Image 1 (cartoon, each protein chain N blue to C red):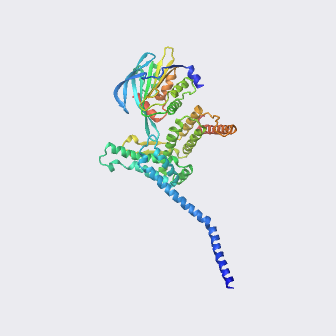
Image 2: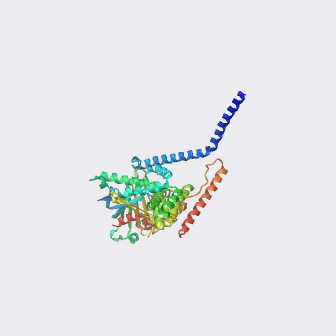
Image 3: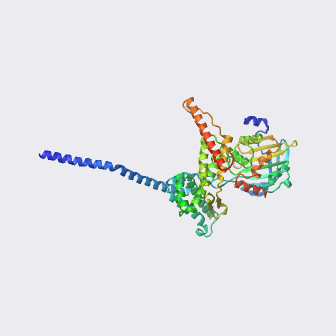
Length: 293
Length: 214
């Protein structure tokens, strides 16, 4: 009898344990989700912190011209990890810093070297901001526009500056200084140029496009000041430049790169199709601006 | 197609030049470390063409920031016939029998960037890139290769008695300098010089044009 009781007790304990285990398993997806969210938040916080440190590190901003290569990777990461509010806020703060901090407040009698360093530091900030603006994803940009422009947010004006910085990055760095200053050897270059141009097109088509601007003053050397107002028709010029580039140099060629002639032929046909689709889009965009392709 | 066009034009190869075909007389003004000339002499096929420097300027290009690209010096045979207005400058070159643009590079400019810059300038001036003379000129640019930091690039125009134009393109650099000429129909020189005196392809070229006209 005692043994039976003992056995029942044992069974009961095992059953309870099993039930606990079953209960724990049922709640596991929810807990795992919470853990994933916390890990994601940690990853985001770390990513934001590390990239911010990289962007503001003096060594990374030592060489800014023609392209601040030392900052680009950090700019991409910061654009990825920062929230939409953080991006709008940092635009506001950094532009304010560039425009309002005067060397005369810091140094009573600055030497030419002091002035150079002071202005360079501001250019570093400008370059960081411009690169971040250029790397923001379209989804994030839409959210920023919703939060700041459409909802008359605290950083609405700074968002107009952010958009101008984004245009400058895409137009001057990714297109003019890069893709459009090289021969279009591959269809991929055409498609990448179109991707960048589409981002500028998207901005140019905003109803408030004519209000997009950037004023950067506060440099001791006034030659470095920037007063830039966005002309939406720049989008048309960029489409025309892409078309001209593709028309003069791009030829889709049969290449012996795959494992068989059949595969090579398939790739050739696919690339021709990509090229046709891309050029058709370019022509469409040009016509949409009232011009002839 | 491109090779046959190049061969069909009258191409005079002077081989690898050790000294530039254009000899400048240095003045006292300096821009970005380059002494601006008061004039010079272009020597082509044994003939000397004296030129006067009528304008100079610095070409910047906007990337992240403005970068210095070259110092430009515009020279011509008869300064008095040069019209120093935005609208009249380019057209007034038709009154010149010889003129030149001499660039001193302030940074290395790869060949594809050089050709791209020329193409952009031609597009801004609505120059037909499929024109045979333009294609021959652009072939010279491609063959001429990169501009070297401290090196020079010159485009020299001689108007011939029969109305044609001889365009000489020279790139001077430490390794493999380049020199070639083409004989073209009247009008090519104006198209080439529209790059600097015509419709500017960007704001910095607009500033350069103003400097050249001062």
